Image (cartoon, rainbow, N blue to C red; front, side):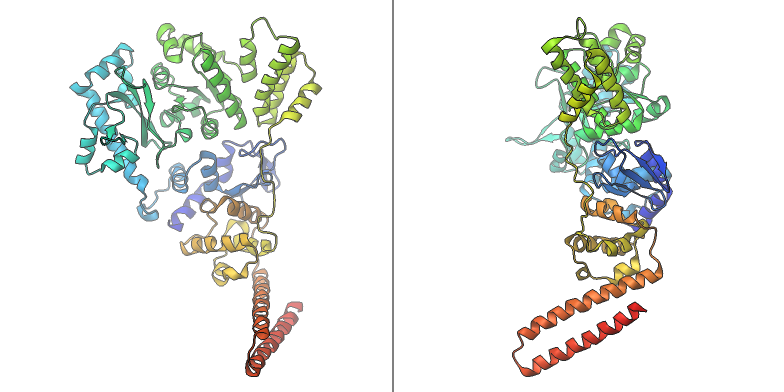
Length: 562
């Protein structure tokens, strides 16, 4: 890691704008305040400090700089967060900024596999795949979606390019077996799954015969995590930001059908229930998320669950209701895109959607209590106070239960988020010293080079100091919070936000105090040796050294008083 590139990206990235995409920030003196996106809270305890380029939540303790925020919110490693911000602010990173990791080879392999899949799809070997898409009236969209086909031969092709079978297995393209590795996506239509930067990180596959499951997805790997990627994201982002709306579907063909219908702001989950990370990504994409899953009971339950995940991430999603037994692909194919977009337009909030499912109105008696409790689970999942208030109002009006009773139930059953609270991770004894090292988010390189690990009393200080010194040695001049542990980042962000700089006089005062600690530590060592001295000569030598230490401490004390 080269400090220059990191510093340049941090300088050109406006932390208020980056955080403000997902957190509603209000000015509060020299800082900005909002609801923390990393835990549920009603009173804002999340602060952004533009002057220092840092942020800190005094509720859950999370904190860092702009890179650390992108890492945590997007569940990204340091390098990917840095690259994403670099792309946004127009910084070209030097290739030697990072050592090439194992993921580099996987990305190259997956890129070459995608080329092969597309070539096979367009060749005579892909006749069956093309005929299948033609039958579903989706053949024209194959090129724009990157659809491919995987006949036998992928492993041999990758070997001819210099890739090993073990690397192909790590990428999820080969399956281990007692009789040797076999190709995971053989005889399947392939859909490339891309990360937020548009790089192929895995594939989904649709079988063309009855052998095996109809749909499969690649496994998690060093470059792909199902719960952290939305299928179609890179293509959907521009349109989503322009229109302020994104549609969430479940399947590859649902996605293809909506995109083919002229609505590119559509994404799909990758074979899993919607995760918290994916919900955060949706929030960044657009303010209005419409969940559009299958119209059967399983799809309805999954849609409500997905909406609750988005509510927990601070969003306010809507749910479109499809006819029983239809998915978006079926509905558009049968009734056209206009009819589908009409359903999207009429999509309801999570509580309203569930109320529409009730036949004969809101039940009374025991059934009414049970229904109200289920709806209150939706209310409780919301992290935005205004959204919770709106959902609560809808339950109150539909159920007939009083606001007081509903709020009492909510309070009694509200989930505990288990946040650690704003505690002093350093044990208190090193706060002033650590604050001097990271004041204003900047690294005091001179002081860090002068200090030693033994100058810290607390375990937190002793563990943090080597990490800060390593950053200085790498050429960094500001704290790279994303390279610290969560506890270290929390401690540094809290202390960095409390000061904008250390004056030269204060720095000398800190050094004097540290020197005083060193003298005390040396004195303790000498007194220990004095108790174990085996000769009068050794005893005399130790006593002379103790007397000299006492004189130095006295002189330092006089200077300190002056």
